[in-house]
Image: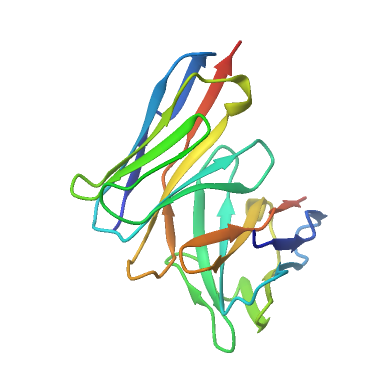
Length: 114
Length: 113
């Protein structure tokens, strides 16, 4: 099946720094990718839709200036958490639709902000 | 606003027993997904249900969809310990294949020997 990778898998940073997370579709092209956030023992919440060649669309309540998304190519989307704070600590997961009827999820990035 | 409700949220069962997880959603949707998540891991796709009356089976798991009732079920047959995980259903939030998923809260399944 289709493969989506994320890098890094785990990151620890100090409060106030910025962190970039990459999401790649390894064996297919994705004009759209999705970024989700999952807090401990909770469900996944969609943060934004990443669109190749155009601006990302953000869900209500998600700060676009804090979570910068760039869909640089048909296989790469990046999420940058700017000026990270402890409350941004979470599990960030990207996904990409493929073959018209399913989505493939990346392995996730666990962000810890000290 | 689309709401997706799963129940139960926690399920502890013995090996060999059968049980059903329910997923209700509030508005019409094109498709419904079931995923499995192991602790510390991402999501593994189990089923995609695309039409009313759809039934899919894989091993000890069987999923069905009733779009009129806005209900999907995930049935577990003769549970084994390896099925212990959290199971999520998700619904296409807008429809028309937008693929913006709205997830239920998840059902944490523990299968005891």
